[in-house]
Image 1 (spheres, helix red, strand yellow):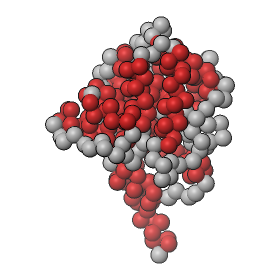
Image 2 (spheres, one colour):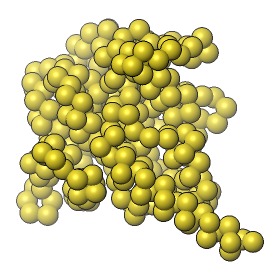
Image 3 (spheres, helix red, strand yellow):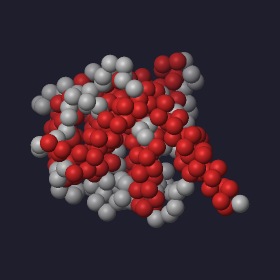
Length: 294
């Protein structure tokens, strides 16, 4: 890679600068994502750059597994090639979002590796549809498709279970909220949320403070491109999702997601100013749309 097609590992999302402004950091993210969109083997390139930046040893089983998964994704395996949103570009963005959030949170290299591989595979083999009434259907697909790679690379059963839990935590209506509530329990003494109606992989988060933190990071990484960068980039993500779902998604839809479902960042509060910009823009647009309809 050279020139315009080279990833700059000295800038976000690969590095956290001192006293950075959230809006400036968002522009660095977007510049990186635009380079990624032009790469011929984007997933493998991003995985190797991210694991290097996270100071993960190349002999670490999670590095080995991630490279094998990435190379298969670049070959078209489970990469959502027909999907407008849940595709290789999204996989790369979420993994790099997770890298940056893990650096912000001060995770050690082992935890960074867990977070990054969970982010990489969270939509592995996504079929371009919604979960609908079968909550966690897509997350289960991804976790099951990932498991053989982890086992073949020598990842321990305990770590494999942690990664599956993080994948399940990206289900935004229940999984992400459960992970956040567990993290608040461990970090701030909030009540431990009920887990009786949740799938077994997810309930592990309620037993482990570090896992709860990691799961929150992966969940927030999943929506950072839509909810934490610029208004324009958030609009682009929504346009891609509307194309994939084959339905219009307007400002009211975005407001419901930002205000009622996602609400705010926990680990990624650095990006909250950008989220406020998105909410304000969506509110103004929704009001204009209501006036036009009325």
